[in-house]
Length: 235
Image 1 (tube, rainbow, N blue to C red):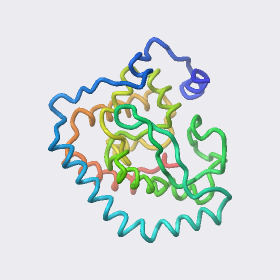
Image 2 (cartoon, rainbow, N blue to C red):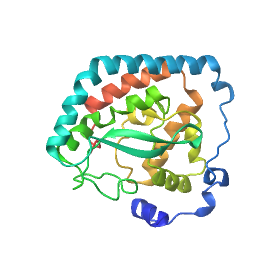
Image 3 (cartoon, one colour):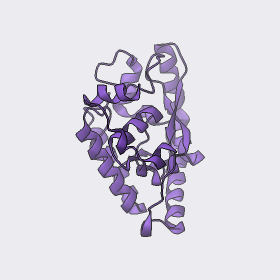
Image 4 (cartoon, rainbow, N blue to C red):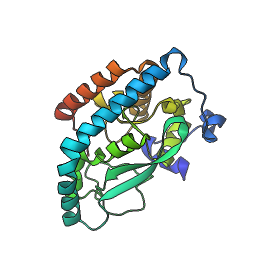
């Protein structure tokens, strides 16, 4: 099933020898070097909680009920969608989103594509504006995610990508983020080619090696600009 999945994405089979044993066992070697220390982590966590507090007070408090009502009126099903993804150190956690699709059995193995019949009318709007990701603010509060970091993928897809790119799982040396360096550079939505996957990986790995509070603030600002100007792949 896994080989078929990636064959559909990239039009070629995978080389199993590229899949590192430590990744298969769900373990990674922390290679932070000089880029990780307690002071930086405290600053990052404080930044995450401050942004989360203002988001909950000024946005979630009134926007959540509105979106929830629209979802319920538009289609049958739950308001929220949860999906198992890899967090820091490859520890799995449930990532929360607003439901944007009708109930289907391919949510974990098939990416959303342009004109995807599974996406609801309200779902299209939520995806276009990235409001479907808003519930992940609670993942940040719980400590599963950060405001900024490599975007987490569904576990089956993540394992496939790890087979395609050696050391891919080292993206998980830091917490996954609601946004990341790849997203603020315009890499959003469907991964339709190996080149796009590798470009995202390079940006994520650059972030892992260089992350700091100032970098996070810059990425948040650039993400806001990107949402207004480069959203053609938000579907």
